Image 1: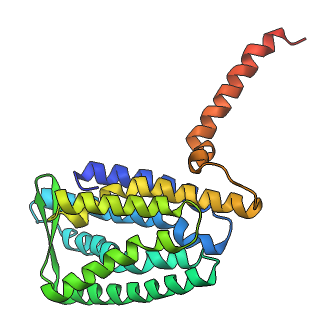
Image 2 (image 1 turned 90 degrees about the vertical axis):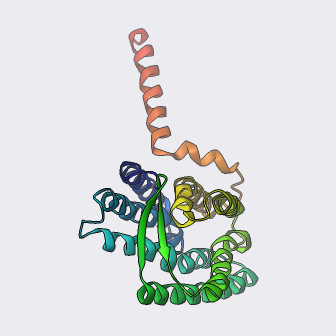
Length: 253
């Protein structure tokens, strides 16, 4: 997360828990790329935690540069390809698959370009008003084009995948991008990841509903019904059941 080292490490731990629950909920290999999204976010946030530790130590630590590059590899190289690919593996309709194949191919080009720029031009992390600014000196004109393509391949896939409720994830990504680009333009790479926790909960919901739909094609519950399967919610239900049992037990026999 973009505010401090503890916030990043706590976010990473929460995302790891969400990710493990999401992967456990996935019941087929084609759902795994999307189910792994929270776990990838967890690693990304963990790496930014070490970026914060390095910045607070005054750039004197040996792990600041590796942590910076680790974070940016996920942010700029992994996501442009992973997002459209994760929806491509789940899409059933041929027309949707064609659109997602095109987006995946574009995503690969974006990943390749940004990866080459990152390797060639390098990057420096700086702390600025409780946020991390990643200083990137890529060719400006070309990067503007690839920046637009980056937005397209990470925002459009949920809308065209033909997966029920996936538009909620697409809308969350779009709104978070607009808010971040307006309020935190310089820190957009770091701050946009602030929304990863919310998106990860939505990813869990999508995987849960796809699992339920394949088991029962007539499944048509509201999107937020997946919260009943949330580990904490299930634990609370078991606690209430145990309390009811304890209350009834003295009257038995």
